[in-house]
Image (cartoon, rainbow, N blue to C red; front, side, top):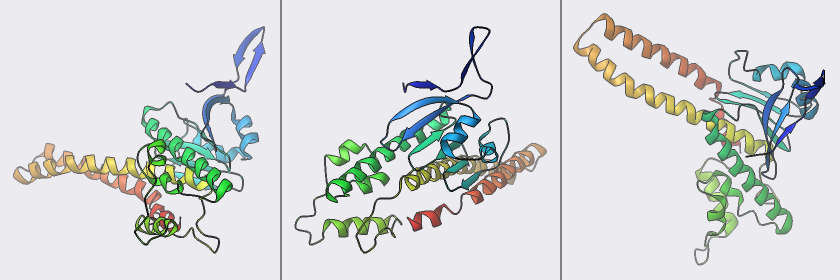
Length: 257
């Protein structure tokens, strides 16, 4: 369990009392370390350099559509089940205790750790063989212990890495100095986008499984009940389509990186 840091506690009549508006934030730094920080709006504003209006989209008491705000000091994300702030050094996740967010948290930890290892390797000797692990499944340890064997293939390691990026639609990172590791913000942002897309895909699959039997029943027997079921499915489909449009630029983002 990550340690908890209480940043907003005051004393009233000799009794320690939490300040109103204080919420727990899960903080993941660029080295992969995590801690829970209890902070209010003003503490988060000082920590991230964001104005109060940008934090409103994360307020669980308010209903905001899916939004990604790009600011000079941070990126604010309200995307499906994810509500977080990404800076150049850390990710602050607001609703980490939500069970639906748990898989995203684990995946984000894995990617951040891989990014940190790849960055250290590049700083030490220019070897970024761990960089591609940011997009692979499985544990970083298992991948690190089994590096790819390029001997006898006539293909250098850098060429193989480049080819894999093209296959995954992740080209565009090479320049005259060779391959580069993505900035920390991009690694965290892509994890958020992929999690949102996965959530929408699962909902669409579930809806499709419900739609076929409902349409079959309506075909065999037209009734008020069957018509109502199809109408409800159509309404859900329209709603999902609208949410998909909010993240449709994800494919362009993947092509960019």
